[in-house]
Image 1 (cartoon, rainbow, N blue to C red):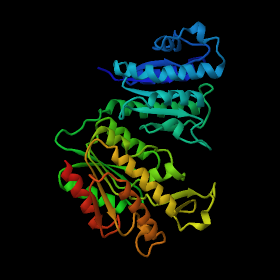
Image 2 (tube, rainbow, N blue to C red; image 1 turned 90 degrees about the vertical axis):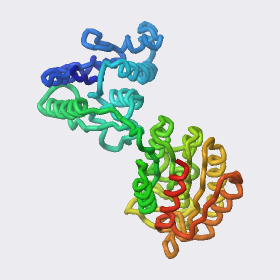
Image 3 (cartoon, rainbow, N blue to C red; image 1 turned 45 degrees about the vertical axis):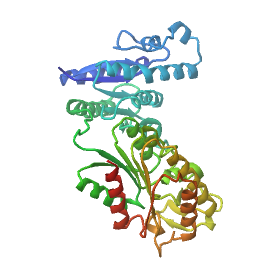
Image 4 (cartoon, one colour; image 1 turned 135 degrees about the horizontal axis):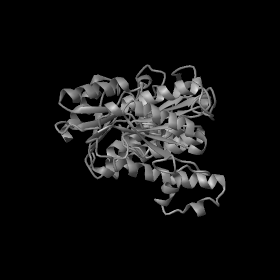
Length: 403
């Protein structure tokens, strides 16, 4: 059976572009499922799924919708789209999705794409995905491909034809080769958090686990990676969590460059899968100093990651607060938990002699954590830095023992 690509846009302004894309798909022997998200003048004659149909699926009549102001119409349609598009995907109407349009088209399509499973091909083409705009609003924590259209979509010309052709070819290639995520039933999967400042230790632990027959999945603790980690835990894809970098929790509490992954450590605890915690990166707040110099910045120990990002050491009061927060989240876990405390620093620059070395601050965190931690949770101290082999081996062994 031929694969089908959903084409999503506002047909009242982008019908020429969408019909051109549909014709390209037909020439490839693929189907086109056209989704019209026009908020004012829908084109049900051209669409497989029109905006009035989308709204009706959510109990909203077009006559009521049409009386709203523009902002309210966009919001109502966006919310409906985010629910209805996954339902049509689940019903087998399409195998991948391509959005062609301006900024509002892209944002509405992205809101629907974020509710599709990982692995489903998702492509957004727009003139507004470049410049001083965050990709977050289009990508979220999904596997979305974003392509800058160069020219605005205000009709067909040599540039837009080329861009649409390339976008269709890319999306068609993914759809034709698409294979759903399949978990290996013979291997347990262990999620591991890491960041550049702890990657040596985390990667070593992953290699140890792989040698023991496990599959590992690493997540960059940059404000998005942690969200992906937690999502995959909730989806049942990850069987155990080796959290060796909780830098995002520090950013959640005090701000910093890697904000965006709030409520870390909770998903694994709620799911009841094993949690092994080591405080990698918990002692660091990083700042994008090209745009913002925070208060008390000059008082902090610091090391520049590059010309724009600076890693700074937390203060004692911050360390104590973090210990309490981490303990509270670990105490709430329904499954087995173990804590590993490296005595020679929680990051590369936090090792003895490093620019972020401060054993008093590290002790404040460890003391606060252990004082507030449930006494039934084992605490394992290791006379090493988190990046040292001794710590990596211990993390891997304890995680493997839980499984």
